[in-house]
Image (cartoon, rainbow, N blue to C red; front, side):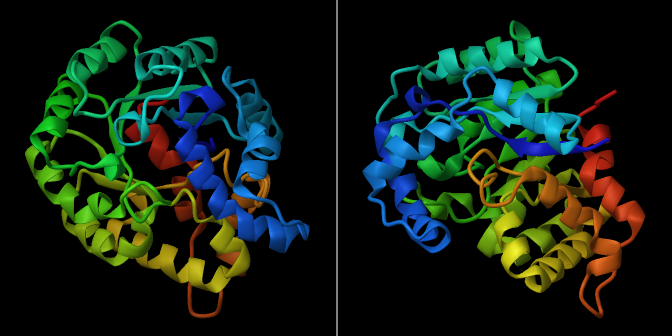
Length: 311
């Protein structure tokens, strides 16, 4: 079984306009390099970003079928308090995600999300779990709060009550979101204070990966995904292999999850190619680095199947 442990579905009206413009700035150089075309951020928002929009999840299911992905975790995100609320409220977005999960119960796990500082955030998450049967909780500290803050703990208390896994963004992030809140060391308190929760650190910590690796070696309820690494894996395979090997050595092969963070990177590296890169690790890793078939199978789905309780 192949499980994408970290993915998204998005639509224009779900995020503030400022988010799309700032994200488009990151795409300016790659578009020029890969396509030989100079585009302004506004042009990218209007001409390229619509390819990502998928409010019903139908595009995602088609991509999963094409790539051989059995199950995908999709995460809502709330940037509104920092950047201005979008046209579609975060409550409506969570309900949409829940409906996608309901429509594809064997294929989609929908993780709820809300900025914990919002009035009524705890009531919304309780509704997400109790009424809408959502499968986990996504926390995105980059809008201006720390993972071990009292506001977050109100939501973690509810996740703990319903025995739901919790996914935190870790690592640096594009402007105008704030990276300093996403240092994985703040998960130390979270892991200790909620020992019965699976705490998932996203993106292998990016620039803070060594801190995360060592934390993973001593916090046994901490798991890690390496979504968002596919472009580096394609452009600098050796560097990626070294990073992943170190992660496996510290976390052990039982707590490392494959993911994509799509839809944003799918155009650069199709999901099928990303999966194949992982499948090829036992035979194509650089000299001096070894991966076993058992590790590959665990990362691509076995671990997520156990941690998320997928039948």
